[in-house]
Length: 360
Ligand SMILES: *Cc1c(COP(=O)(O)O)cnc(C)c1O
Image 1 (cartoon, protein in one colour):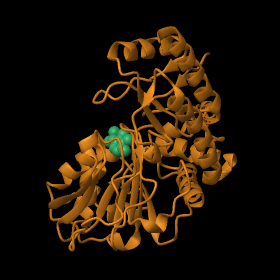
Image 2: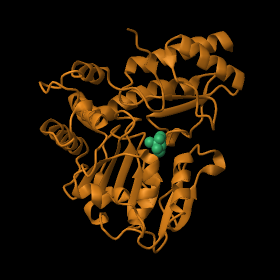
Image 3: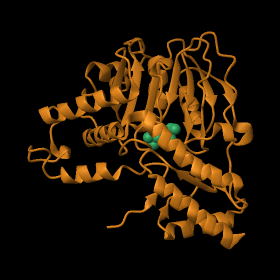
């Protein structure tokens, strides 16, 4: 068996310990004589899996009691509709456009009400986060929406926007559990888990209780109403059971690493190796304004598309996989999520140094 360093943006690398544990439990989960894939979601064994997973997530993030944790399906993209359907009481929302995901979310919300794009960094290919300290937040906005870490462009909000008292909604798909967070600053936090937590098929929504109501837009399906899932503790229908089980293992793994403070330190140390190299390289160049750089997704270019392609190809041959940038931006992108070891980033930088010497 040989494993590569996988820099995929998502689905992405998972902790090897977690994969091994899951493999050990594959045929017989703790004396049940069956795999977690095969058991009833109403069984005692699964009930323990989902309640433990929720508690561990609450411990990791310090989620207050007045927030519900929901394990849903449909990916982050389904939340683009579910959020307005549930929260747009006045049918007005403000969106901050920092990349493709925020753009898509805003476009979807437009189906349900008035969307004000109160800030954008599209003028410079989303290479920075706009100043959000004094935005023209709409008087009647139901919420202000951000994509906190921009997976494609490699930017991250280092400071949350001043929403002037309005509810903050954040897509944290690609920075979920990468560092500590003050949950009380948000009304709703959500993310697809396939970037930094677990396998595709689970989306986690953390939502303040007062935002969970029956007063949703007319025609909202039962399955797309937060209250349905909150009331049923994410067991209204069959949940993505195996995915939740793996997420639970990752939460335990994160706790064993020392929690989110420790992850932040590790992630900063990892990202620094790469950014420091980029900042002095004569061949490679980071594409993001330094102050807004993501710890999770690091895009870079040589400035020559043929050379970029050569780099991606040769890196793959050296066991460094999935370094091709997003199809809409080109170049390269290294996603260095929680489960990417420090050694993986060092291996990447060593390879980049060698490539630079050979190709300059
Ligand atoms: C990947 C991604 C999405 C889309 O996730 P799906 O689960 O495929 O719908 C949305 N937002 C962000 C920030 C992402 O990185």
